[in-house]
Image (cartoon, rainbow, N blue to C red; front, top):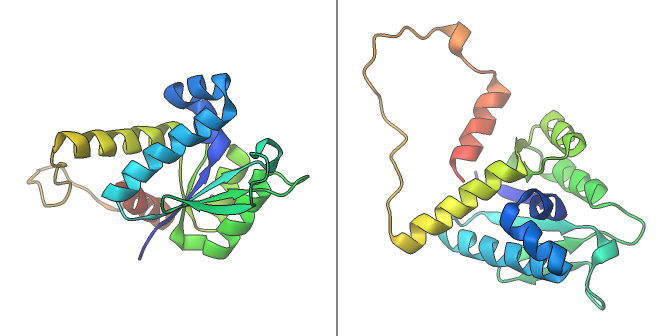
Length: 173
């Protein structure tokens, strides 16, 4: 099953140290830096990525939906928040979606619909590490396999089904 990563664009930019500096200079610089990083990430991991921005800060003469370097970029219509557009997308995608946002309203809605969620700062760490490892040619650690142990693990240690699915999707990042 492929993952569709739905990103709350301005939330990720403003939660980030590197993107927020550019965003304060010029909002377009912040968007371009995010899209450049996501493009590099998409070359490594072939996930479907959609970035959603509020339409009030859209570039002049822009369409509501563009494809830039293989990444779908959506701007909400005037008078509409990006949050409601993200919620509509999550409602359509459900279990296929992984939502990147630190907005609790969006995170709770996505979790209720069965989508996996990850905070903006955690996702930024993952994409930064993936891009860094690709440029340096470093192989990732093998997370699978059995490790011998005498520690007993029973049902009390087992995560809920939703949390296990969420963990699986996040590992694919």
